[in-house]
Length: 114
Image (cartoon, rainbow, N blue to C red; front, side, top):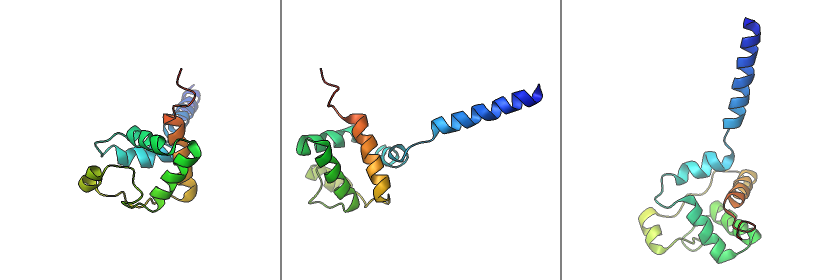
């Protein structure tokens, strides 16, 4: 009986740990953006307004994250003066693309509008 309870507890904790494991977007992007006064979805909508398609949004964000500069930012000048330009990402290209794909899926408006 004790053995069955012990095994059940181990299985439950394993499943719970697997469910709470954060993806690269949550553990890196969201964690950092929580510190900023502008919510992370606002960046997405700015990129979407400027670049329109998933391909172009991802390309622009990918380029900016790898080599941020005042010239490449979509944020207003007042925002850059107050908070500065983002630091270069420490994510690998694969991790960055994964994060951008998750970000797109989370905030895309295509297919959600009626």
